[in-house]
Length: 79
Image (cartoon, rainbow, N blue to C red; front, side, top):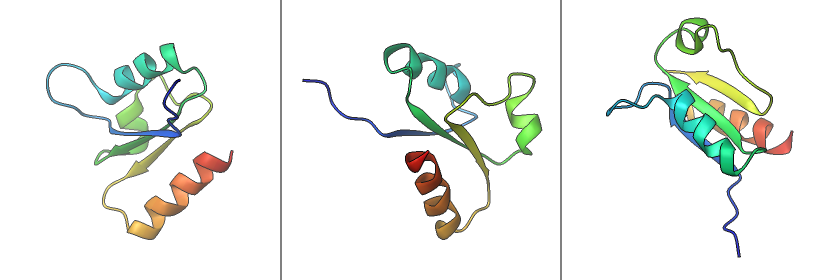
């Protein structure tokens, strides 16, 4: 039985050599429809660079209010 995963939430910048986009791409190799929310302290365009966002991905910039986080998660899950 496979564990259900509805959403991956990751920071764009991660320690140890892998960034959030690489983590998302890796996650989607096993789960192509995995929804992903990126969190970043950088401007959206600067954080994602030329790659942009694929379907089922969104970005939330810091600082954010908890209700903003909840709304973004709900939006992604219901898409």
